[in-house]
Length: 220
Image (cartoon, rainbow, N blue to C red; front, side, top):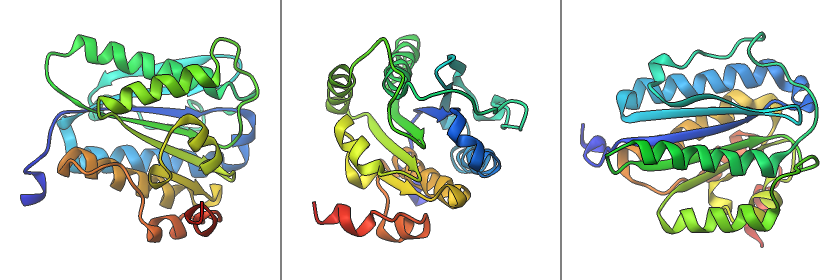
């Protein structure tokens, strides 16, 4: 297929919020995330080495590192249980560090996509600062890593901007539209994997995701 002419092995690292406030959109998140995995497996298959972390203030857990999508178990209500608070900065730094370790183990020249998903602002980090995270992201962007920020029921643009993530790669979605939003995230990821496009969301995708900030952020 012509669209696959620039397809290239890609490391996809996904940080999934497991904090207590996610309980209200638990089912939607499970379904949406599973749909994200299914879309990547269906369209990109073995091109993707997938890393998954879940986080809350009790622990930041690395569940998969550089795994084949076919080997990544889909979420269930037993394996995804929201609790506790939001050490977002610590979790983002750990995700990047785990991704760096994955790269070090590989011998190919892989593309890199890092997806941060949350529904709340930072309130529990103890190990790292915002300046540390922003500096880390800026250094990896120079190496052409693609960063995507998904914020449910929050001003995701403010947080993403503080991190150094572009508004075009940010989605401030309605938690009740998690399935549609994760589908948009999959489409953005596949654009990077299959066509070497920058990670981005169209205005139509933002509107379909219930992005209440879509007009305001364009004026900034």
